[in-house]
Length: 186
Image (cartoon, rainbow, N blue to C red; front, side, top):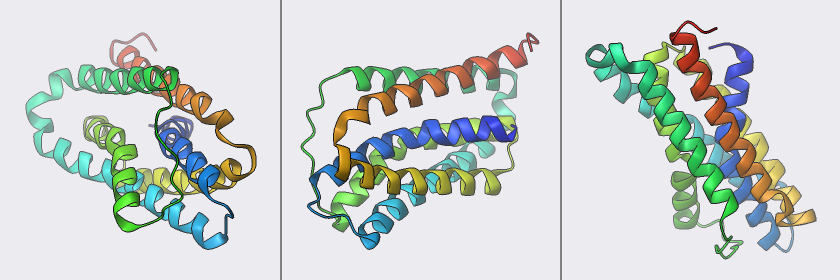
């Protein structure tokens, strides 16, 4: 996986965290550097940690499914991407909360990084250098989450659905690209 692909993947995975960060910023009366760092660390940490966990799981079983690994990577990325697109088009019924408490942030960080767990499984099949990849994903998510909190505090949720749509499209395109490369089209 090249740098551009990893960057697109990191941005795609970050879009859920970005959207939630925008909502957090909207709910906050005042955004400070410490609040920005807290949100960024939670989301960036989980977006970096979940693919590592997925990679560990995928590596354990990769010997049994190497004949179909490209199909698995394709299916996971396309399903995740379509799910993000579907969620972006739905009603935004979540109430924005300014809380940065442990329970609230843990739940949000886990919820926004489940797709990163599935991507980590595909990393095992694609033989990605995992530590640089997960670090990069975590840093990109950290930066975009911090940006989201500040943007949300300034302009509101106008970009939330667009961010989720962009992330979904990126994941679908990457899934199709992996499948086409394996089939020899590229």
